[in-house]
Structure formats: C-alpha cells, structure tokens
Length: 200
Image 1 (tube, rainbow, N blue to C red):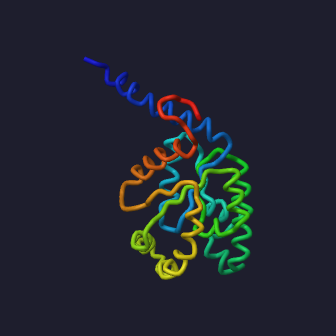
Image 2 (cartoon, one colour):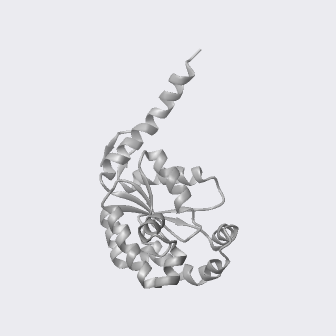
Image 3 (spheres, rainbow, N blue to C red):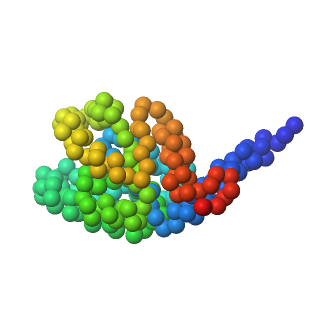
C-alpha cells in the first residue's frame, strides 16, 4: 500500500515548484488586487497570500490605522480629496515593502501616480465583478447608498481597471476557485514555462 503522505507530497511537488518559480520571478514586486468594493479583494487576497506564502496587506485597513479613524469618518471630517491623497501615500509606502499581496480600495487606481507605481512595483490583478454580484455583497454589509453609487462609478472605473495586467472574474464561486484562476494566470503573465521551472 502506498504511503498516502508520500503520495500527497509527490502530488504537491509540481505546485510547490510552480509557486517557488512565481515568487522567484516576482522578486520584490507585489501582487496588487484592484476592483470595486464587493469584488472580494480582501477575502481572495488573504487566501492568495496564504497559497503563495506571501504577507497580505489591505490598503484600507492601513489607511484607517494611520488616520486613527474609519474611512467613512475620514470622508465626513476631511472630504474625499484628503482621503485620496492619504490613500496614495499609504499605497506608495506599502509598495516599497514587497513582495506581498496588496488589496486596494475601489478608487485607488483612478490616481495616475498610483497606477504608475503599481505598474513599476507590482503585478495588477482586476477582480472583475458584475453589478448584481457587487450589489448583493454590499447589501449584505448594509451599505445601500454605496450600491446606488456603484451604478454611476462602474462605467467610469472599469476602463481604468481594464488596464490591469490580469483580469479574473469574481463571481458566486468559492474564493479558492478564484485563487486557483489567479495562480493559473500568473505564470503566463510572468513568462514562466510550465514544467521547466524556468522563466523564458
């Protein structure tokens, strides 16, 4: 009888080799998740980080920590321009500490300088989600006003999101399925030749 632990280890060997090669080619760059609120950037990002053995950072959480208040409080007290300036600074700082998986806020990449930094210091992945999926997820969190605003924001933001290196459809599937698709897309983007353990 074959030892199941040995068999499992043998089955995992190609996946581990691919992960090691992804990390080698990635170098100090971060994997940056972009997309609308409700696309699953934090949930998918945490699982992706675990899968690749990388740290995970959430820009929104970092902004709240730096400001000592929630994002809605920042908007209310200081306004959106103030928030966006702080968001750009936080993302720039985080990108200096790669490699990592970094989840960004929905409007972060609307800033040209932030987009340029992500292009230089990261691999951008757009978690593309349809309006009905986004609405369902944000309604569950009780954020009805944002759901209404999404209808206005989506057509403005999608052309910018579409500039990302990789696009993966976020939908009502287990998050690990989305992670599988991202991990499958990374070698192609990074020019990793499957099975050869080398980059072209």
